[in-house]
Image (cartoon, rainbow, N blue to C red):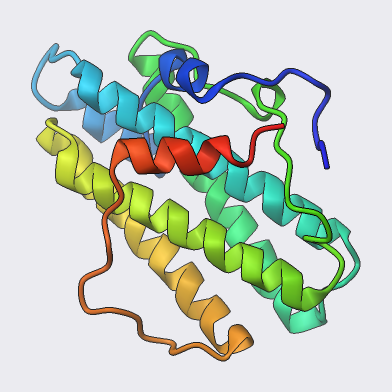
Length: 201
């Protein structure tokens, strides 16, 4: 179920596109101020590109879910807040990518698709929301574990905390425990890119 005009890119192309960033202009500015003139390592750029891909997927999914007309008011309200959060995450990430001298991927660069009937009922929407938010949280935790730039860890961790809040908001709607595992699983860059690939048209 394509969302954007056809302009699909492969996961490898997505990872090559751009780079770094997080919550707000203030966070971006503080990150770039830290060690003077220090370049962002390729490893960290790869993770930041990946996180942008995850945010674009989450935002695209939430937009379709909200447009489906299948959500009850409380559920729609929760997804609207999540959508606003993803937009803030993306804005910060895109600012850091731009400041690193690269061009961040945008919604026009990727044509996402979803399993059939994903948006047919509130139940199907919530199940896919859970899967995407779990993937996104795992991506951020993997980045916290693996990035080399110390100044990136706090903002990445802050976004991870917000993504965990999203899962807690979804949990009671799905009859799941509100509090999850004591140590959330961190996903490798390979696992996340493979999962994102499943959503490409």
